[in-house]
Length: 328
Image (cartoon, rainbow, N blue to C red; front, side, top):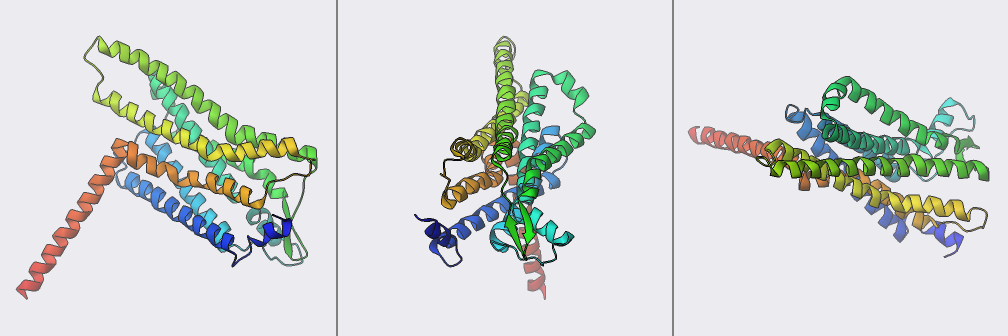
């Protein structure tokens, strides 16, 4: 496919553009529906989800819902090239640097990634060092962890602020020099892939070693209690979400490595491959709520109970309305 053909498939009205738009809409709908459900259930049953893990899970869904709204604006609403005034004033700079190169979206992605890292660390402390967990993990510490997650996301997205600027009434791409771009790519892999992959891996290995020792000990006693089974269910749920994170982010990270190795050779990814990799990253926004519904028993039970109560309430109202109509 030539460069001209590769650009034409992304023009409005082309078949690939229509397919891309349809997939993006599916991603947005699943993201908002899934994370919205998690947010509603956990807020409606806040007393049932008052643990530190559930608070971080709630924050995870809030970040992913925000990501979905930003994704909708950037992929569905925004045109491919933003128009600004030719004065290059502060507003023009803001539009180009924040909205032209997905800066806000990658900020939210980074915050979501490190919020999940903190969930893994919180589970590690709760399982391996329960006394320290009770003394250390307080509401104030959780707020600090949430702030750190957003700060790391901002640091990750910061280079994108300098990749676009207003020139002649349009937002124009700015190329970094080769060494600078290589450094940024390496930092990108480390911050948004290696650390989020390595920290949970270390945490879950330690957790499973601890659980194995606890299981051997429980065989000599009365067996695992209900609370330990609930903790294990949460752990397995978060482990599955970690595996899905690897599936969604590995192609993009491999693409960055290939770009580093082939820089200067004249080869580059086509826009089609790039879009597929970014769509896979975006799909990480909606997979977590699916896992919660399928594997997190406590969440599933609360969701079912909430829906059943709502149905019963509607049924009672319908019967009362029918009796009122019959008496008139």
